[in-house]
Amino acid sequence: MTPENAIRSLDQLKIELPSWGFADTGTRFGKFFQTGSAINTADKFADAGIVNKFTGCCPTVAVHVLWDFVAGEDPKATAEIAAKNGVKIGSINPNLFQDQAYKLGSFGNPDAEVREQAVRHGIECSKIGEAVGSNLISYWFADGTNYPGQDSIRARKRRFENCLKSCYDELAEDQVMLIEYKPFEPAFYQTDVADWGMSYALCKKLGAQAKVLVDTGHHYTSQNIEQIVAWLLDEEMLGGFHFNDRRYADDDLTLGSIDPYQIFRIFNEIHAYAAETGSYPEIAYMIDQSHNLKPKIEAMIQTVTTAQELWAKAALVDREALGVAQRSGNIVDAETILKSAYNSDVSPLLAKWREEKGLDADPMEAYRKSGYLQQIEADRTRRRKELGITQDSSYA
Ligand code: LRH
Ligand code: MN
Ligand code: MN
Image 1 (tube, rainbow, N blue to C red):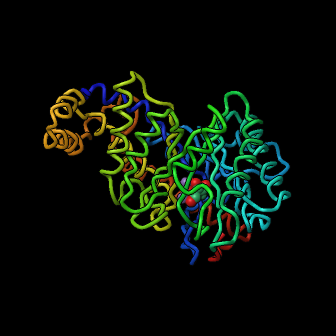
Image 2 (tube, protein in one colour; image 1 turned 60 degrees about the horizontal axis):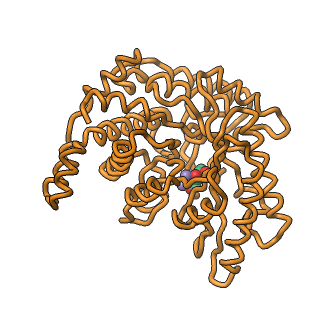
Image 3 (cartoon, rainbow, N blue to C red; image 1 turned 135 degrees about the vertical axis):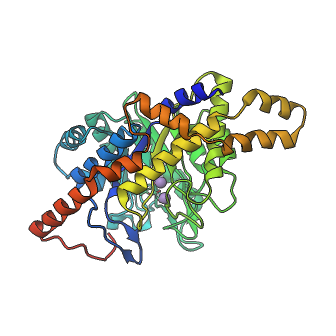
């Protein structure tokens, strides 16, 4: 692709920010607090609005229903707070893992009453989506078993099929159900939706409004994620991504911090698909990272700009030359073509794209100079005092 077209292709990459990435988070061993972390949903949207302001490509925010909506309150109130901060509500994430009832699972639970409760929540989430003008319902399940023999794996699969169908049938016409997979944690023996094949099989049974969600951290070490992406693209079954990086398991590190070439290879598959079909697939690009130690907003800007860099590099792959090398079995040249795109300096392209949008060429620098962090640190410290909130170290 020419540099000019690579710049244009950046318009395709809209990245959704996770509301939960702005609040204090930690590990199951505890939390380390940040003075500037968000206290409530309004703070999360304000911070997301700032990331969007400096990067120009993050117009939506993913919300977790239990964490971002007040029970019994009109969900439009949350949408209004988002709008005030220059962003919109993006994917709606049901919470099917925190309630005590879900000890043995939600959709996979052996108890029909618990499954009904979970289905009611799923349906409520699509109604919330309709009310706030969001068409993505993003399902992740903590369901599974911890010990061999604990439950029937096939029975759990069938319960999932039935519960998902009950939720699917209530979707509005334009709504899409994304089904995310994860190999383990919190279930440590068997996870009900453990890999892309299981997610794919469930989506396939449901119909055209169900698609697979690939969280880049939800794979075993050395798994070839771009191959999964290529297959899902070819099957028209790729609905979205959760961006993060990992060294071991679901580490939720910032994107490309460990293996940027992996992300480049994923983006390369998407550009290749677009080159062959004439258009980019409809994919929801979402961040799902928790970056406990990095400052929240900076970590988010870092991931967004890294995604843009790797996207632009992958756009530069010389597809014609690559085709020639592939057809003639010239493996060395084929790989070199990928590597030379990966090694190219895309900062001038990104600067140009940002200049066109009236943005600063260096979003991180511009954010740091803005004084926003100092302002929220002072404001949130004062509010925490007024509200009597202590940043308590237990995990929540
Ligand atoms: C599970 C997960 C899923 C949740 C999010 C908070 O590990 O990736 O997407 O919704 O983390
Ligand atoms: Mn995820
Ligand atoms: Mn995860």
